[in-house]
Length: 237
Image (tube, rainbow, N blue to C red; front, side):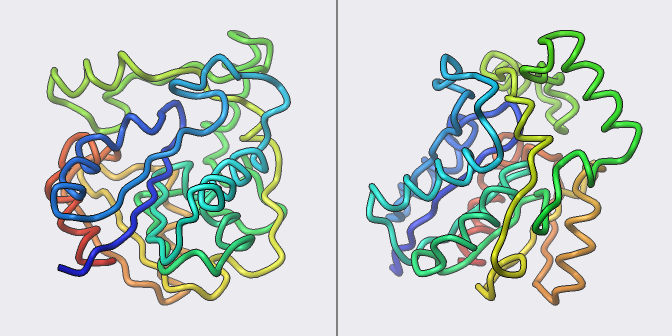
C-alpha cells in the first residue's frame, strides 16, 4: 500500500473536528492524516480576536507543516479552507505534493473573500457581523445550509460550529506566485445541492485546466458522505 500524508483544512465556522469521519477511514487504510484547526475556531475558539486575518490562517498551516515536519503532503482545503491552502502553496511548495480544493473558495493575490461572494451575500454577512458581534465575528449558519440533512449529521455539526473571525473575510490574500504555484492540483465539486459561493473557484479550476471531479452530496461532504469522499481523495492523491 502506498502511504500518503493528508492535511485537511476546514472552512468557515468549522474546525479540525469536521474531518473526523474521513480521517478515521484514511488512517485505517494506513495513511497519515492531520486536521489542524484555525486560530479562533473549534477548540481554539478562546483565541477569537480582531487580530486574526487571512494571513493568520496561512501561517497556522505553514507552522503546522513545519513543526510536524510534514512533506509530500496532499493538502486539502474545504470551502473557505481553499484560501489558506493557496497561501500555503505559495509559501512552502516544497512540502506539498498535491493541492485538492474541496468545493472550495479560490482567491488570487489582493482579493478578499467578500470580493468574490455574490453581492447580496457579502452585504448580508457584513451586516450580520456588525449587528451580532460588532464586526468581530460572523455567527454560524444552520447546518442545512451546508447540504447536511440527516438529523444525526445536523446535530453533529451544529453542536460544534463556532463564530468565525470576520477580518479573515475582509483582509486580502497576498501571493508571490499564481494560484497553485505550479503544483499539481484538482477540484472537487459537491453537486447535490451545489454551493453558490464556490462558483468562481470552480470556473477558475476549469480555466487552469485542473481535473474537476464531482461528488453527489452537499457542501459538507466530509460529514454527509465520508466513505465516498475518502475513496475519491485516495484516488486523486
